[in-house]
Structure formats: C-alpha cells, structure tokens
Length: 282
Image 1 (cartoon, rainbow, N blue to C red):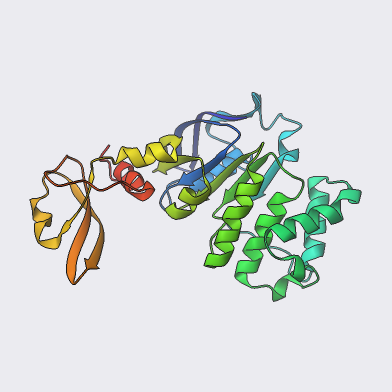
Image 2 (image 1 turned 90 degrees about the vertical axis):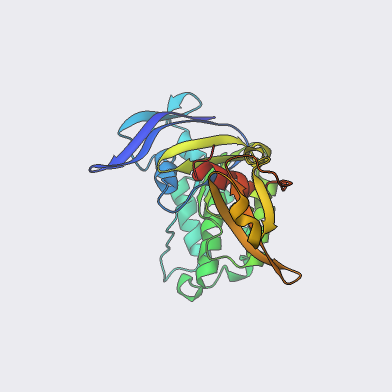
C-alpha cells in the first residue's frame, strides 16, 4: 500500500531521517521511538507535508505528490492538533468534512459516527474553547476518522487521555483496522502491545526493526533476568537495569543483559525487546 524508498530528511545541517525503507500493508503498525527519534518527521513525510531530501514515498506504486487519490484516502492526526475556538465541535467537524471533500449529504452521518467512536457525541453543540485538553485530543482522532480513510497516520493519539479513554481508543482501532493501514506513533509501549500487529522501532532517524510484536519480544529472549539486588554485580558483560521492585520486603532488579547469564531468564515483554534494540545490545 505505502512504500518508503531510501527516505532521508533534514533541517539545515541536521539530518533527522537516514535512508528509511519501509513497506506498509493493510494492518496496524506501532511506531516506537524516544522523543527526538524522528517519529513525527517520518509521519509528516508519509502524509506529504514534508518534502524529503532524497528518496520518495509511494502509494500503490505512485509517488504521493502525483497521486490523485492519496489525500482522499488519508486520515491524519498531527502531534499538535488545534481547532477554531469559537466554533462548536459539530461545526468544526463539518468544516473538516468540507476540506476532505466529503459530500454534504454524508457529513451528518460521518460526524455522528466519528464522534461516537471517541465518546464525544454529547459535546457536538459545545464550543471548542469549552472542551478539555483530552477532549480536544479525542476530537482530533474523530476528524482523522471522517470519510472512512484507508490510510490513517496518528501521531501520539493517546497523549493526554485518561486510562478509560485510552482503552476506548484501543477498541476503536480494533474496530477500524479491517481493510486499512493504520500507523500509530507513540512512546507508550503498552499501547502498541494492546492494539498493534506490527512494530517499527526508530532510533536517531534509523529504522532498527519492522516485524511483528512477537518477534520484537523474541529479540530479548534469554536476555532478561530478575534477580536480587545483591546479585546484580554478578551479571557479566553489558547490562541495563529495566526495573527495581520490592517483593516480600526484598529488592529485585529486572536486568537486560547482552550476554547469556547463569540465572533463569524471564519471559521478555515488548518493552524488553525495544530496550534491547535501542541500547545497542542486538
């Protein structure tokens, strides 16, 4: 569906993305990386907002800047999403429908559908300036859903959402994922684990991984150990303490080790696999 070929992007003398190559099919992808890793820059390139220094982005084998259909099938939530403060939520959604070229006869149904997905249907007549930050974020998700897009690029969609609304977002993704490509940028690993089928790990502008969630866990297989604090110094080679916890009055360290150790290893999590990659242990 979307192919990224040798994509590089920079600003002045700073190179942000380095020869990125991806093939994104009909499934849900989590884009994981630390702040400043290049996630937002990559998403803006995929949306056609940034022109790359080199390389290209293709939609169905056609460059997106030449495609007549790409932006008609695109739903995009930017990292910083704002709306006209004096409009009601319904008026704002109606305005976005017009920008997307959605037929007037379809707008009311599309708006109701999108606001229901994010639990804001009862706020349709409220002015934007009266909504909380979390509500505005949910409205941003709603506007990305308008028009039933086949490609959805969501940049930090759960930022500012409470646990209940994060759970609702995961359910929404589960309902929407059929027959479309959804890319969710985040640094919250548990969100990726809950609703994504594949994971793209990006670090310092380079793609380190693009496989299934299970394969990312397996990256850290036999490399994670939970041992008593007093035994931590017995771990040989490079190591990283993932977590310190207290169990029955004793302090334990969950440790990521580059080399196999003489301790029984723990079953790795998605976060373990991610940390194994970004710490350069792989």
